[in-house]
Length: 276
Figure 1 (tube, helix red, strand yellow):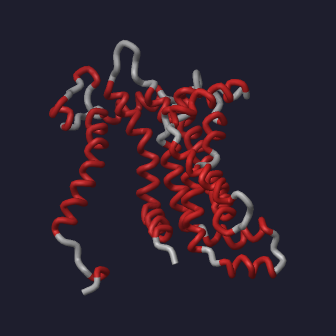
Figure 2 (figure 1 turned 90 degrees about the vertical axis):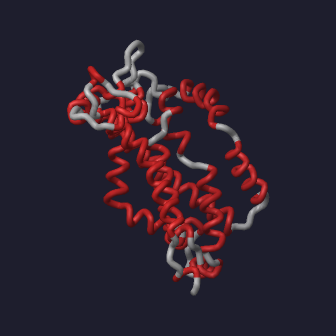
Figure 3 (figure 1 turned 120 degrees about the vertical axis):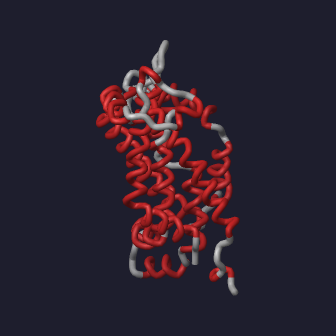
């Protein structure tokens, strides 16, 4: 029997169940603590027993973080950065994989080399440039540094190298398409599965981004959900029931996204993983 027709064994299901539990336990603990009474918050094993104050704490966190403002800002940043990353990464990937120009290999190595630089090393120059550009406290200071990613360029280059035949490009050029028109009409449709995966992971990364927004947003911390939820922690006293309620509010939109569009997202990822 071929590997495609072989049934998964018990060990496979055990590994899957354990993996799912590892991801679900932190979320369950957050919901459980968020449901506690703030005047008698339980810790340790007792924190695993849900209380009856979940809705009350969600309402408190909802008002404290200005949820709709933070949700709008987060959605704006995640959407703009994801669309920009997909477009520019596909454009660069098409150039590196299908166009012949001097220095192509060196430039590609430089792009890949930037992936080895830790984010912390770029924080100081980015912070100085954002300040000098008058972007401190603005969402654009979060958007602009993420408009394209080295990983996106690498991913789209590797995908288009195998998924896009030269014959299609030559046929488009024979039909009179310009170079950019060929990219839009031929390369973009061919890159759709990989672009869907890149959009998904970029969107999640921007939605959960905390370090850089926390530094650059300054007094406008309610502009993004992660920073606003972190601000629920007090200087002298921290009500963890409200903090965990803020975590639940921050995570809920992503969970809804996967619930309603999970099948389409997974199919896009699988299509991007299987080329040819």
